[in-house]
Image (cartoon, rainbow, N blue to C red; front, side):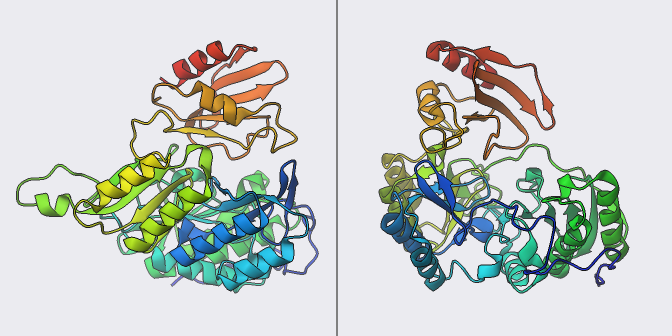
Length: 441
């Protein structure tokens, strides 16, 4: 059994307690809106990205009633509503509370949980009990209310996709066991699978104790000695560490049909029927931005088949099935006709961008329009366009980084913490598109 972690540092900061971080966390939520150039912005946390159709309907109502009508997916599988009026806060909170999307006002920004979006759909373990268990524990912990809006939990089904995101606390399924990772360390702690959610919460509370004097928002922000003490404290309760390097790049779900087992459609005659059973369909969303019609179509598709949507940390959506014969093909045709990405061969595959100008005052250009103009052949690497040096929402692992600077567009190849010497293109859209395409190839 995992014992309570030793209280070797001051007690956790309570929801109303004093902290050097208090008042400094500017991450938006649904109760604290962020002012942008296109109006206020709300970020609705969707733990694990899992939405039933009724809650998806409520989000669309909120977007159309209070905002610009569109829904924006984030790199943590959450939803942003933009163009909100300054006085909408009370009405928005009431609507989301009634829909079950705001179970705890004190914890709404702390509910940052990503999960493997194909868990349980292609032969991998299901993560539903972990997800509901952890969200309930977070909402029930007074200390967890002090977690910043940047702190991230990840639940990985063993394939390494969300483990690669470098969350603050990661649970990894492994048979009847669970691996607990703290930050980006290559060492993990093995614990019984049933204790995973509780262990994740205890690790987060231990982080709060360690962070109280450092002002750190995330595990990676802790001073090296404090981070080492945190891991030691967790290890004293969880046992000896096991070496398991963290994946540096995630394998994201390919747009299209998901078949069991493991998405492998090739099968012998004896297993052909089972192998071609479609358990889900995946779509990517160009630049993570959904019109009301696209959102409604996805919701209707979920309601007809598996009754669930899963928003991915890569701005895509998985619709679990099972799908009847011909149902997956029909659904994919309809979604493609609506402008969504349903095949890996789409030129939009792997293309992302921040909101850019005019939505963000800090952006130096309309990077979404530039990304669209530069879309060309499918690239080996993802590309992300940022309107300024902050790179809001950028991917992890290996990718092509396009950043607008006063001197032009700077393009560089990123491999984890390494960055190749950049190339800069000035005021030449054709040269910019060619340079980006060459970098992605």
